[in-house]
Image 1 (tube, rainbow, N blue to C red):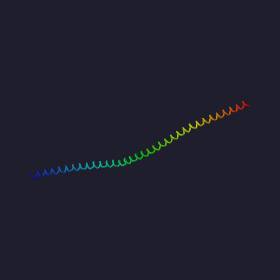
Image 2: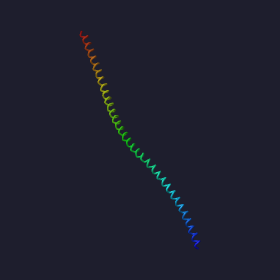
Image 3: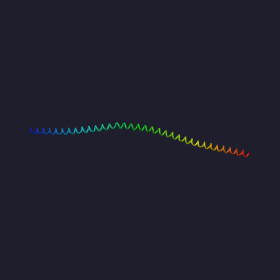
Image 4: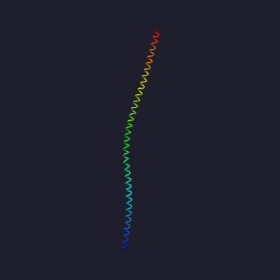
Length: 122
């Protein structure tokens, strides 16, 4: 009976050793998997910093381009005002030139009539 108990104990020890080996293999697999996930997490973190920087750069660009767009719109407004002034000034210049032409024709006609009248009186 002692021999049977020793055999059972030896068998139990072998089983314990086998189970210990399996447990150690599972533990090693889990450690490798955790290390791999940790490496993936570090890679994601490394990419997250540039994404934050990219977001800040995008915000800076939007602000800069917004300011440029505002300045361009102001410049366009000033250009439109200058164009409108030039149109008004051009119309006034044409009106003034026409008035001078009419006045010149009128003076010439008056002078011709006066000369004609003087010739008739003579």
